Length: 311
Image (cartoon, rainbow, N blue to C red; front, side, top):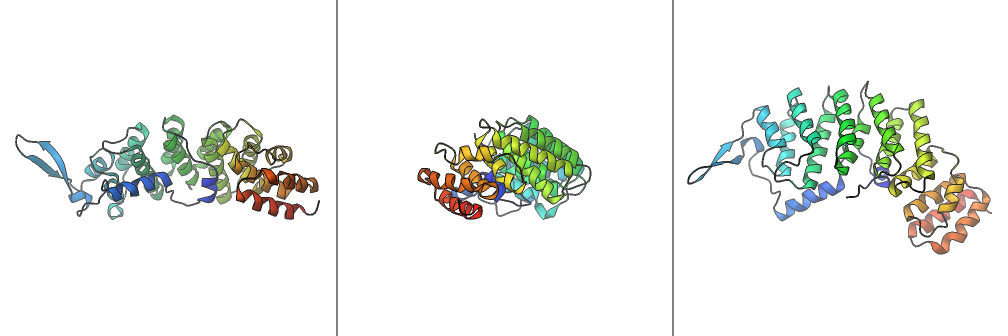
């Protein structure tokens, strides 16, 4: 499974993340009947009990917090009702709730009856809910960093890094920096782009000289590495202009005329030349136009040439 990172993150900024694939999967399942909502709320819904000798017996979920957590993390409910239970009446999340929710995600075991996409959606909603609660920032940061480092599910790792980057609380910055920088330095991983963009957004919200220096360093490293994950490299080149990362002109000049290069990477390289290029680069861009197959490249080339000025 390939994780989509990079430009998606640059273009889709929101405080509460909504993973596109998971949400679409949930919506599609709902339309097909798999996620049809019950007419009763989760805490009064009838769930299958043990089978008797003749008829199936049912039990009613009580409103006790422990039963609520059981319904969310291990019960037989479909994903829509698990999420509804999570947000039921804006019920506060206790320490016991926190432990139950994070333990489920950390185990990495998909609860019975859920597809992988629905599990990803549920995990994302759990982390959204925990980030909205006061008092969990420090342990949640540690939890997210641990999951990102240990989970064998690349989607869960990706979501964990996104949520980690969004935390805002005293004392969590060292955890955020350490984890995000480490992932960004792993240039062959698609998670490098997720970590890089997360670090960029973190520094935008709360500027820090050390974070900025690390951000520029890993951006350069990703952008110049031809063996780097393509989506992550695209993210790096896209950020390089805003971060004023120098030293990428020769790399950009190699990418722009390369018809075999990823169009997204060529687009980012053209834009970089438009800001930092020399007059000769306008000629390079013009001579490369015959290799363009993507309409966005033509528009980017026109803008870059205008920025550079007449050759």
